[in-house]
Length: 142
Picture (tube, helix red, strand yellow):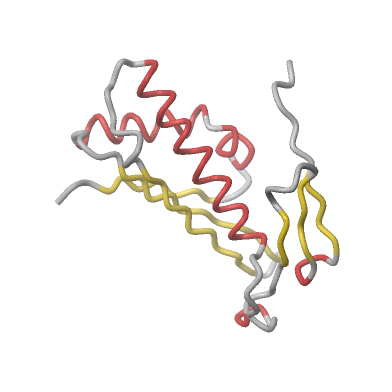
């Protein structure tokens, strides 16, 4: 496997600390949500960071699949919303994810095909496969 890019990000202080990347675009405080016993401060939390990264990567995967299949999509209006759940059961804590995908201008069949194929090639989907529940939704124009 050939590494095309590496990102280095450090977290200090756990969920109540801060994160910083090696080249500074990521540099902010973390806060624990009130529903998890925290103060609900104005910092980000790991689930938000994971959701942002997964949504962006999955959107890129949709673009890649569409381009490889010659399907024209409006890349500026394409959106993926990731809803990341921090869950607990008798075995402990785990994550779940829902990806709401909006691909303007495609029909139901084309959209579903793009989303399913993106799920096969997206590195975040590969990393989470068989580890967490991932629900895929296609949002259509009304």
